[in-house]
Length: 427
Image 1 (cartoon, rainbow, N blue to C red):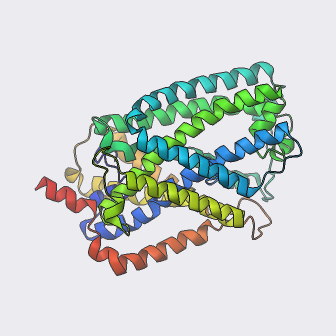
Image 2: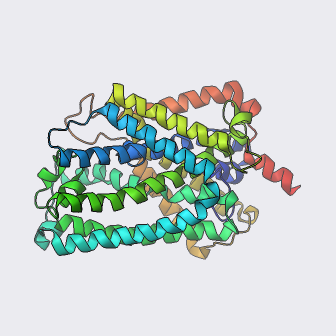
Image 3: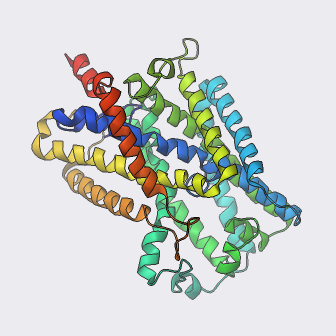
């Protein structure tokens, strides 16, 4: 899809272009409504984002380091929120005032990513106390209260899914990439598989280095990897190892905001958002959607404020990320399958083609997305309480209802959909 229609819009654009004409506008509008919370939640991940990955994650890792140096330190939610504000400010400055440096930063980030991975793997293998191989590969632990190990695995896979969902961020930068029809899908594929191999190696190293799973999960820092570092090296070593994790995370947040703002810009450009003319405005000097960048940053800060009042509400919004992303993939992949089966001659030319295996891969991908969506709505543990209930199912339904109302009120008259623009350009 990224090769046939390289565009900042991503999923909602693909749905508009590949779905049946009579459903293009409605399906594209609803998909766009579900697609926008995903990158915003993911950006927030540093502070939690479905588990903690973007702005909040950075802050909470720093809080964990402080607690190692000062055992009497008691991390507060409002402190994590302030770290989010600081991180978002850095993100905004880089994306607006250093936009021309992004290609260089991306290359430097790739080198830093590889070096950080190598250093951590070497340190863990050389210095950490190791578990026997049987404990790593043959011992299963169910700490979620589920009645069977299989059910526990199904629910627990969501964290792994969440960690691999940034792959499509590259697609939202397509309009600023040379030869995007070839380079964007190639970057997605190589990035996914290379990082997958690296992740497996790093995961095995970590598992060998955890003497007690219960102690790792209950560590006062809140991060099992800091528990592993504490058992491996000195405080100075912990700071150094954590720093080389934080730097790639910080820069990846900067890049992810760039992707998020482009997706927001594209949906506003197609009149899918309120105040669309302001959001979709491109700065004439910098040639970037500065207003969309500002909006993404503001929303990220507003989300972090929820964490002060209720961590359960905050986590509910963030946990929506997997479910909403899977929904957008289900709709977009279904539309491509529809075109491939019934109208293959109408598909645009593409530089990245999987040939005969393309359709089976699409079908497998669709089935897995349905599978992941189903499990992403389950609670993480038993017994279910108000605090650990997976409220994302409520928000998921709520977004659909609100989107449906918005479509009836404004969308069906104002939102045209990118397919119409593509057809006009073709004419």
